[in-house]
Length: 527
Image (cartoon, rainbow, N blue to C red; front, top):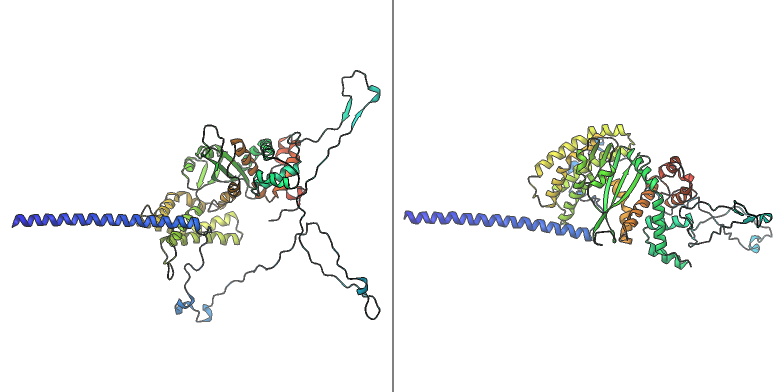
């Protein structure tokens, strides 16, 4: 009997172990299934969902009829005053005054100007309405006529000097080029501002009776970019002169790269910095995403560098002269992905989760920034505001993250968002100790967006030289835009004046930071 009982006990223990093993596997499978479902919802949202990261106002708002009695004012002292705000007027916006106007008079017949009593009616006023008209692209030919002069008395006489006198042509940035500065600037702005590829522009020119091949336009772009090397060097110095540099990068495909396949991924890097009121922007093409690119650009720089969480920027932490700052927008985006992946319930409201709580903390931080901007605080005042208000929120958020990191599955979107935030924390809190650094890297992302939009149209660069030329032209154009200049008129001014630049001061005067819109030939820039 003892032996049989002992055997039965062993069987029971073995069964318990088997059951425990099955239950653990079941829990692991369920956890993996939930993570996979979450990833599927996240991918579906990226494909078919709205791109905006704005949280709808009704996400946490209770119904009016669900509010308890204590939410309603009872006494006069409980009444909440809502500050007034200005509403934007609807309707048609006025036509800019700088546009030329052609007057068309619509008058009544002379017979209608005579009254029934026999007297002539007097003009007492007028009604004026305006319409916008457009003249389709009109191309013209500029003929440069240079009279030749010769001395008839010296004909047939040996002389060391020239026998024919003729005026010199103005210096051109591209010798013997068929395009004027206006035409070249028009082509470059269409490509690098309006994202219109050269082959489409070629078709547009054909419609107005002129053949300008895409190869010719590509050659113009490369030669203009090559002539601006000195400007780009000075632009880099301008960026280094500031106390903050924003860095970002995005993929670009280059077909004919030596030693690489056409499917290889290259990168366009962007560096934004310099004085806050006159920023500079540089695009650089590189076949690699290695941190050596940023390290080379940041050589001898002292100040704050703001980036995303890409590991290639890790070297900055070990640089004594540079303070590395991370991006709160990337943190917010990761928690927002958790909220979107949760989906919407079929009935009722979605119950707020841990990601919603994280977003609340981040909203508090951005509310402090918004109030400071509305009150037009100086850098010193903003630093004091961040120390007094943002620091306590950051400390509370950090304690919350330390608790939740042990609760959330590491492979889930929430677990990844929490881990990312904690790994970047020493960089995220840097902004609270400054008064001139924004909490996110949005300035760099907004700067690189025109390139990304253009990439959707022209898809790839043909050669590394073409990609480098694009980087140079994007640098000048985006710097001009950041300094309030209209890109076409700036490029036209640059192409006209660059051949005459001789000294360092001449070149520096051509940088967008040192040009006012009033110096350009075109109309004022319209924001």
